[in-house]
Amino acid sequence: MSSGIDQLFGLHQVALSARSNRSQVIASNIANADTPGYQARELDFKAALSTALGAPSAVGPAKLMRTSARHLAAPNAGMDLAGASLVYRSVAQASIDNNTVDVNVERAQFADNAMRMEASLVFINAKIKALLAAVQN
Image (cartoon, rainbow, N blue to C red; front, side, top):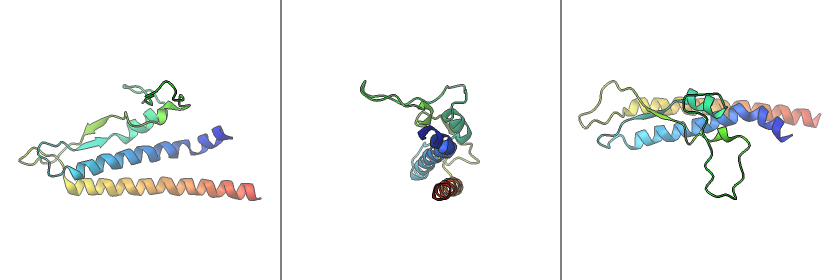
């Protein structure tokens, strides 16, 4: 039963993980808006999602790090997005101190990412409700 549930929620689970990592990158950009020389970064969501789902890519699938020989091997090692590559965001105009963070762009990206994260949660909730309805009948 576990594998069936994993298949049912797999895409949304991976998407939520990628969206969470993207939120962290955007928040880091906003936090470093006044840091001289800081270059705004972006998580390539499409590449991170395809890597996590096991699609072949130039860098290969992300691997879970086992820090002890006693750790269990993950059944789906592609779920780890910590190794997803970050790219530098293209900038319309850099500041004098060579900081490329545009706070307005970052806020818009953060809001867009939060909206897409909410959409994934709505899809997951709908699937859970459908499963509960099937079990109750």
